[in-house]
Length: 245
Image (cartoon, rainbow, N blue to C red; front, side):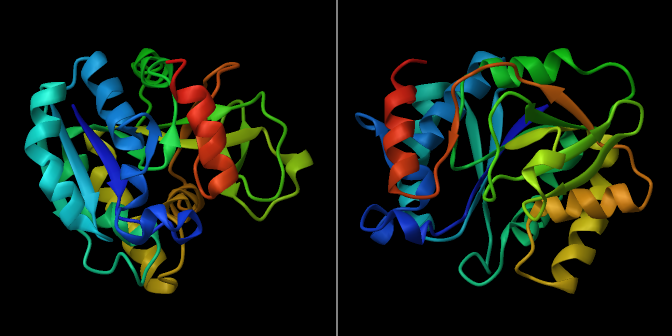
């Protein structure tokens, strides 16, 4: 099992920080970045290798690669996304299609979260699940969140931002456990998704899988503090909670 981070996005709503840095390298606790927190989580649960999909301002990640490897005791492999500034992240995850064959814990490069999320996903394995999404069933939802409807027996039925919040079981927080046996089917679903519309999310790839009859499971993460950093308000919240981990 390896870690996988999607860190190719430009994060234009976080300018001026992202004028020179990808969103994953914006500091949230002193010099500590979102990428630092995620790599620390991966190391804490025993992972030794991590693949990072890079694109926008990728040179900043390349420059820090050796220092990050030394700091967290991890071997890092950087995967270039050649369309990071043009296409959405369905393509970004597809770029890592070889990495997901190893079984991965996937984390978005803009999700500040405690290591309890990774531990929850690992604890949920073992009953034939192939893909397990970390789900917040506590937070009050609005329009921007990636909302999920779950059937207790059939798993995820719908995953999209375009949903009445009142219908949702919870919010997908941007962390997934993907077993290697799901890699080929997921890669095909992602390819179908970005070929249909390059602006679609990888979560639309999950929906494509569901539509094909593939069972996608969830693991509720409990009442924890986390945030997806899209804008300056989110960054302020991320800085409030990152120092508590």
